[in-house]
Amino acid sequence: MNTSSPLTAQDAQTAQGEGPAFDTSDPRAVRLAIRAGRFTGFTNLVAREYIQGNLIAVPAAHADAFEAYARANSQALPLLGRGEPGRRDIPGIAADLDIARDTGGYMVFRDGEVVDTPRDATPWWRDDLVPFVIGCSFSFEALLQRAGVRLRHLEEGNVSAMYETDRDTVPVGPFGGKLIVSMRAMSPADAIAATLLSARHPGFHGAPVSLGIPADLGIADLSHSYGGHGMTVLLPGELPVFWACGATGQNAVRAARLPLAITHNKAHMVVTDLPLPKDIA
Image 1 (tube, rainbow, N blue to C red):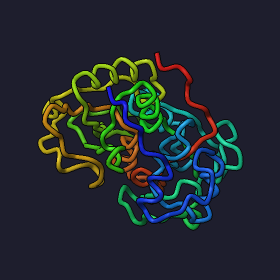
Image 2: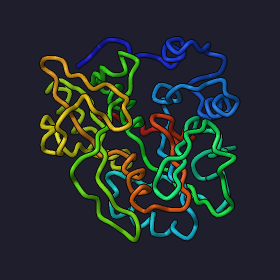
Image 3: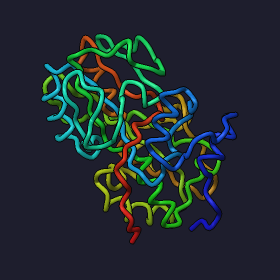
């Protein structure tokens, strides 16, 4: 167990050359700061008492199929909310949400290929797009730290690395593709504690899909992460622990080759008003 104080959101901002000009613990303040361009960093160290989520927006003609795909692959894609066609809010998860501006980093796909990575997706938004918000591991990281589990990547100002595996997801309609996982380096004791705790929270991907053996997932080299970011180096005595990841939805968008789809980019998540569970037992 780690007893040192975790990094704060202010630490993260300072590292990126940003001042704490807003309440980084308030999810609405975070969203407004992102919208105004006053906060451009990853969201893993802000609004830590609130649930964050991955964004996937697809044309209405494919929305039911994507929801069915998410439900068939619920460990990777636990649904937090679904919007209405053309609407950029999802009232059930956040007040005053503009999902085309409040995430801070987007990937725009045409026919399965990334054509833009804007900070503001407004120019790309269409009246037929349906947004989905998918549970994110940033939420259970806060729970793990409450329980005393050390997360070295946060101590180092980093995020967890992601990897494409050789495991197929359950296809539905045009959606399919390989499972994406996130990895955290942990001591054996912390890996056991993290497994037991995360298993109680399927809305944040549940228990790990593999522990200690990258080859079990077809991962040959930890230094080559999905998206090219995140902490990829293990220290002596650490195990790589892998959880299903919401970025699996990006692979599904690629496979579907939709005329247009919009997702979050890297670790820029939808910050919701939904509070984290209070228990850590």
